[in-house]
Structures are given as C-alpha cells and as structure tokens.
Amino acid sequence: MYAQLVKSDGLKSREEMSPEERAFQDRVDNGEKIEPKEWMPEGYRKTLIRQIGQHAHSEIVGQLPEGNWITRAPTLERKAILLAKVQDEAGHGLYLYSAAETLGVSRDELQEKLHSGKMKYSSIFNYPTLNWADIGAVGWLVDGAAIMNQVPLQRTSYGPYSRAMIRICKEESFHQRQGYAIMMKMASGTPEQKEMAQDALNRFWYPSLMMFGPSDKDSVHSAQSMAWKIKMNTNDELRQKFVNETVPQAEYLGLNVPDDKLAWNEDKQGYDFSEPDWNEFFEVIKGNGPCNRERLNARVKAWDEGAWFRDGLNAYAEKAADRRKAAPVAAE
Amino acid sequence: MAAETIPPGAGVKDPFIGDDTLRPAFFEWLCRMGDNALILGHRTSEWCGHGPVLEEDIALANTALDLIGHTQMWLGLAGEVEGKGRSADDLAYLRDAMKFRNVLLVELPKGDMAVTIMREFLFDACHHLLLSWLADNAKSPRVAEIAAKALKEVSYHLDRASDIVVRLGDGTAESHDRMQAALDLLWPYAGELFAGDEVDSALQDAGIAPDLTTLRDNWDERVRDILDEATLKIPDTGGYTHLGGKQGRHTEHLGFLLAEMQFLQRAYPGASW
Ligand SMILES: [Fe+2]
Ligand SMILES: [Fe+2]
Ligand SMILES: [Fe+2]
Image 1 (cartoon, rainbow over the protein chains, first blue to last red):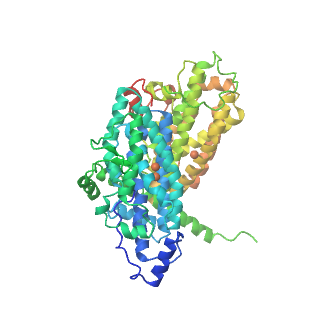
Image 2: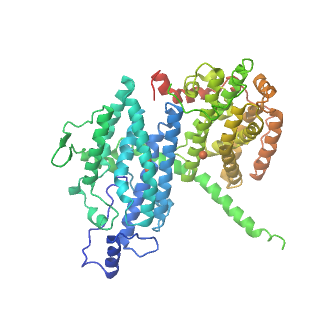
Image 3: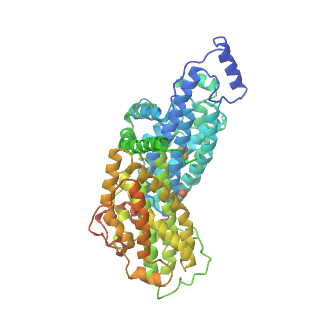
C-alpha cells in the first residue's frame, strides 16, 4: 500500500521459536499491544521500521503531486481545502516518523535512506498530476486505497503504529470524500471538465490497483508479517475490496473504469477485473516511473537547500543554552 | 461563480455598506486588505512540500491556509461593498494585474527561506498592528469582526516569524548573512505599507482605518527591537521606498503569479469547480 514489498524474514514455526519468541507470539495472538520498551524479536523491529518508514516517506513524497496544483487551484475554497490536505499529509509523515523513532531509528536516518534511494515510497507518487481532476482522482482513489489498508492496521500489534493509524485514518477518509467531491463537480460539469475527469480515472486506475502490491502468489514477505499482525490482509484481498467499493462510485460519476474485462461475478460476490501491468510496477519501483527522478530530486533539494536553515536554528539553540549556563543565577 | 460560504458578520447591519460616497474608497481599501493576504498566501503556499524541515513545511502551509481564509473574508466584503455581484473568487481570479491592490512587498518571488521569513516578519509586524487597531476601533462592524478573526492567527504568525528572525540572525555566519541579505532586499519595499494616499485618508476620516503615521512609529519600534536582537542591521536606503502596488502599478512578477493562479478560471470561463 503506502508500504509495498516490505522485506521480512520467512515465517518461523512454533518449534523454531525461542521461549521469548513464543511468549511474544502468544501476546500478539491474544491481541495485546506491543509497546516500545517491551521485548520484541529483532526481525519484528526491523520489519516495522521498514514498513513504517516507507509509509512515512510516502506521506512526505505524496505532498508533491498534489502540491503541484496548489498554486493553480481554481477557487479560493479549493485552494484552502488542498492546502489543508497536503498539510495533513505532512502531519501524517510526522506521526509516522515519531512512531518509527520509538523503535530506535531517527527521522534523519530514515530521511537519509530515502534520499540515497535505500528506502522506497509508494509507487503511486511517481505518476504525474496533469489536470485539475487528478486532484480529485488522487483523493478518491489514492487516499481511498490507503484507507483500505490502513483501517485494518488500526488493529496492528505495535502500539505506537496502531495509534498513529487511528489518527491518520480519520483524516484520510475526509480526504477521500473531498476528492470524490471534486470528481462529482468535474464529472457533472462542462464537457471539458468531464473529459478531464475521465482522463484522470484512465491514468490513475491501474496505478491505484498497484498500490496494494504484487499478487499474493508473488508476494514473498507476507506470511511472517501477517503472523506478527503488522500486515492484516493479503494484497489480493485488499485489491478486490477496493475494486468492489470503487466501481459503483465510478458508475455514479458516469465515468468508465478503463477495463474491458470488468464484470460482476455473482459467485464470488465481487468484480472480476484485469490485473495491472506488473512489469510497469517493477519498473516504477526500480526508479523508471514517469516522475521518480523529479520526486526524489525535489526532496533532496528541499533537504540540501534547507541545511543552512536547520544549522542556523541549531547554532542559536546551542548559544542560548551556553548563555543560560553562563548567566549568574538570579539574585537569591 | 459558485456560491461561497457566508462571510462572518453577514447579518450585522453595517452603515458603511451602501454608503455611495465612501463606496469607491472603501472597495479599494478592502481590495488592498484582501489582495495582500491572497498574494502573500500564494507565495507562502509555493513552499508546500519543499520546506527545509517537516515542522516548517507544516507551519508554512498553515500560514498560507490562514491567509487564504482572510482573503475570502476581505474580498467577500469588498464584493458586497462594490455592489455589482462580484464574489471573492471573481475578484481573485478574474482581475488583471493592474486591478490588484497589494503592496509590492508581498508579490516578490519567495526567494530562499530567509526572504520568505523576513518578508513575513516585516509584513506581519504591520498587519498585526493594523488588525489590532481595526478589531478595537473600526467603526464598520464588519471590518472589526473580520479583523478580530484574522488577528488571532496573525498574532501567531508574527510570534513565529519574529522568533525565527532572531534565531537565524543570531545563528551561524551563513544564516546571519542570508537574513541580512533578505533584509537589504526587502527593506526598501516595507515603506509602502505606510505610504498613505486619498483612499487611506477617506477611510481614516470615516473612522474605519487608522492613522498610518502612528502605525509606522509603532512598527518601527517593534521591528527595530527584533532586528537588534537578531544582530541584523537596517540598511541605509536614504529613505527610498518602492511604491505603486496599492494603486495597481506592480512589478513584473505579479503577472506571472496571476497567470498561474488564474489559469483554470481563464481557460474555462463560467465553469463551476
Ligand atoms: Fe496521509
Ligand atoms: Fe490523505
Ligand atoms: Fe491556523
């Protein structure tokens, strides 16, 4: 989702576990929350850092495609809503980096790994926003897909992550409704607006399906994560759920989902649909998506050009601390 | 354009709305208030996703958001006072540069963070004094009400900007030099905030707006205190001030800003968004 292809070790059987690991697994199975100071397997900690870090990076990089339209938003109200949304995403990044910090990794370390390409963010943010309806489509589909994954994660085993998800999900569903409201306006607007709305759906449909990660049969890292309850559903389950919920919404808008094979399947009580092009997905993950370079460069540039600013604030804080130490204690 | 949310105080009886004599000056003055917020909000929003640190990114987006909110209130009232049925959006998106009434200071490119923060500080220090006066004294209840709402947010912006000016001014050699360069660049534009014309006099005479000379004295004192603490020097410009924005004579930068901001409204006239 916002975390795709998170590497973890293979699943350990109960017999292979140490007594500590077994006790830990029992707590997870009982639905207990694991808190930062408590014992946890090293693999659990590392997998969580990768997953939460990737999620945090996605929130931050995710500001860029939408930020692309802030200065061109068509009304003052739309501009305000979009600004507030992008600000929320930065806030999500902040909570998630804080959750990751409880596992012993600093925000700076994680960001350094993003900037050097050692850590990834969701593939979806490597697609461009080309017309105003894309801002609607991103809210509707991208925040919508994020919600599919994050609502179950509110029950994840790691306490700080679970609490971050509870906070974040409230805002994400707000974003999704606002995105859908833009789509409603566009789809019921002038012929040009309707064309923009259809174009946005055409371009964002398959990349949104990719957000859930590769098919279960190719997804090697799921079993251990699911046993630890840091992944709650399989990729295919979530993708199916997303399609089932989204297709009627597209119909309500009067837009066509760009899939000839899309059909209701009475037996499975869900839609049959075409898989996205997984070659494209792996190319995007490798760095060959339409906007990978721009997105990463924008983040690196912001960070590098902000160095003097951060250094200035730190230098002042040090001087102020020295002055406090040097100052005679107030007359007693 | 689309119906907007009802501006604050819309039900309140305001003797100045519908006053034909005051109308042209009152409309001009409200456009100045709204356009300053709109253009500064726009420039501030350009940072979104590109800030030097996450907390700062969030704070800048929040500031921009507040300023767009103030724009909706001021330009909404401007449209009402004008009485030609123009909404805040009509005024923001369908006027050309020569009809904009913001001071030149706010339309200059965002520059580096030093320029952005120094500009916010110089502007907010004035804006805060102006809004405080308006909230307490403006004889137009609608103006007083908008000012009171905006003042809460602007107090916070000013505190934040002042704090950063001090920290960066007295931070590293580089942060000091950048802040000094920003001050040197912006100082000759600050005077326009206090350069009164017949619009300001008409509003002052009506008891809606304050005397700009007193405002300037208070501003000077406040700004000098902070700049002193920041170890920054006010440049000697021989008293020269760039003027013209309040009357619609702008820098080359505003046209590009508007071309970007107004693109959708101009390309698809009459569409609802
Ligand atoms: Fe988010
Ligand atoms: Fe969101
Ligand atoms: Fe605010």
